[in-house]
Amino acid sequence: MYLLNDAGGDTRFVAWGQMTGSQFDLVSSDGKSRLKGRLRNGVLDAEWIDEREGGRFQGTLSAERR
Image (cartoon, rainbow, N blue to C red; front, top):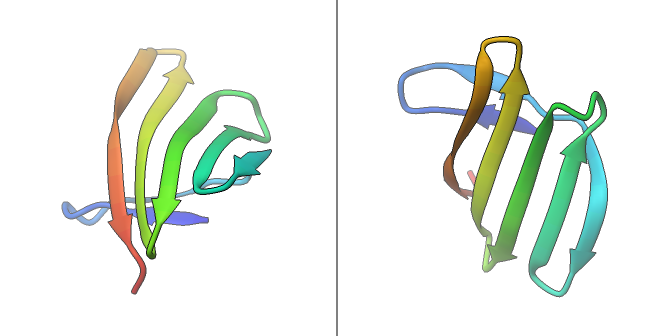
């Protein structure tokens, strides 16, 4: 999965996890990031948690299929 933001940044997210109905909970392959939320009608709404040496970053992610 590639994630792009409006400011022009991007990141690649390789993960494993579960999806039940429209709900999902994914953990990155390195164990430092987590994406938890729902996918409904091509729209992804999720909470993003990213842990790095500089601290823990948490925010929301909303994306539509292009």
